[in-house]
Image 1: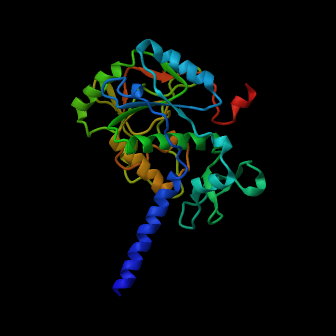
Image 2 (image 1 turned 180 degrees about the horizontal axis):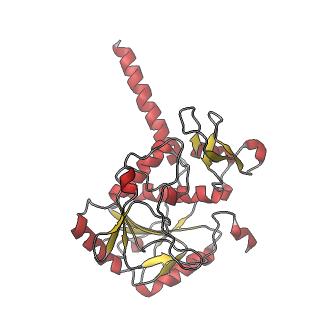
Image 3 (image 1 turned 120 degrees about the vertical axis):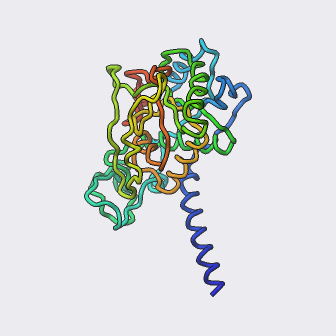
Length: 311
């Protein structure tokens, strides 16, 4: 009897470990850090900027935006989702189970379709699905962000700043140091996980695009939907929110790193990153009320297609 108990415990632990290790095996290592990448902005341990190797002009743009403030982030060579193999793609999504929500559309990448997305109502047990019309580019973006969070967590950082390569500097980025201190004083150092450096994401016309609702996963129903509906000012500097679009400039606390990584290890990738990073239970989002770093309207994107091939 004791042997059976030990075997069952081992299998449970091994199964959990395998699940947790599976996604992480596809994270990209962060290599070549130098000492000048650290503590460039007070209260921030490390600054990462995600940039595809095929987009050196976007890296140059970001350097030009930040140079007046003597900030040079670490360039993270982004995971290019358009170059992922079918084998890898089919290890990253959600494998359909009969217990999942019904009548949801999904997208699969099948061997016989030669990398073309296959759209259908999710129903094939064991088939790997992403959300309807999820592009390979968007999958690469998720892996890039998770790779950075894993590196930051393993490195022991308490606070990081994660940027994408379509940023626009609105105000002096060093204002973030004081804003972090103010938010700590307002809600406590353990009272927030992510601080977004603008009010909301913007469309190509430069107007804000607020997010008022959540996307759906077939395998997960949020337990704290009231939190996801939050949207209100908490001071002259900050607003508490539950959801939003955009992951191009985020200050992330160690607690936020862990919550996001734990969620993805348990559930894998299904939605674009900014439609999924709000799902971890009790994750605490704040935004500034006056934009400091925002997104560059009309910036070229390789999310929906590999636009770099047309340069």
